Image (tube, rainbow, N blue to C red; front, side, top):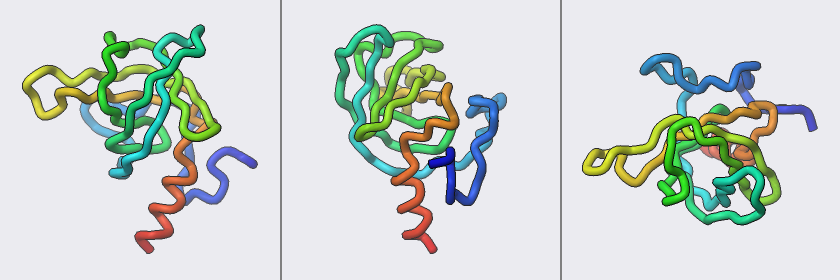
Length: 124
């Protein structure tokens, strides 16, 4: 199947999800379980869930192994896996405490396709 086939928007060639403080794409509030591989050379993963998803990124519940902005990780949803970069880590005692923002480095490899399609169909 071709990347983002059947979606009402396109995935750009750039993986940049944020431009300054402006988000290029609306995120959908969808909670789904995922596996996070904090070390790209390891097969060890940790389970967490999303708060929001988009074709270019996601907001996740924080994991103790996600320790620095710029960290390269893999996120797996069902049988699909893609490479992401930690864009921000919520500061303690703020509204984003315990959360992590990630940016997709492989925009043609969209692991949320089923969730996005079903949410779009549900809202019509």
